[in-house]
Image 1: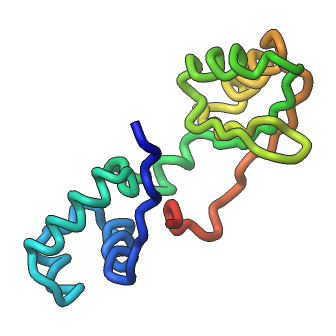
Image 2: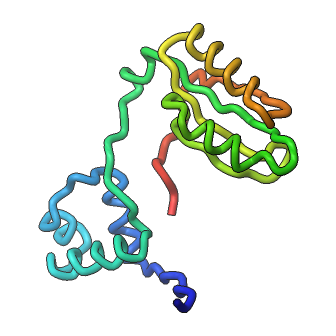
Image 3: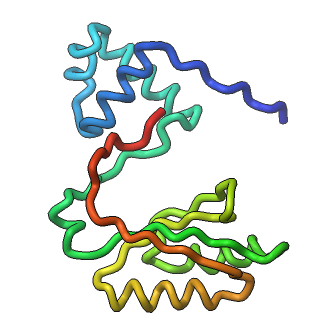
Amino acid sequence: MPASRPITLDEVDRQLIALLQINARESVATLARQLGIARTTVNSRLERLEKNKVITGYGVRLGQRLIDGGLQAYVGIKVQPRSGKDVVRRLSAMGQVQQLCAVSGEFDYVAWLRSESPEQLDELLDQIGNLAGVEKTTTSIILSSKVDRGQPI
């Protein structure tokens, strides 16, 4: 199977994505009106963006009031050589791990955690630190969100 070519986004694609980041439930008719293009054009662009995995899903973003009931934290995780695959598998099984990214720099991975209480976060951090293959962790608790633009293109 040949390697797929990266999709090129034009200005209309970028504007469409920006509108969807503001309100993913916006109607096609409203999107078309805001962009000054036909509804069929919006539909075909959405289909192309989804097919090419530029848009991979539509979801709900929780408001700060709901999030304030718990804690969020980022954890830098350094793993021992050749243990990354197993550590990723174990972290994937933890429901409080919202996102796990491979990164460059001091750490191998950064995990975004969400917990209901400081005690639950402490227990989760102990679990992560005690995983076979985890060498070091560093945690930063999120105090507040100053800017949130969703996921950039």
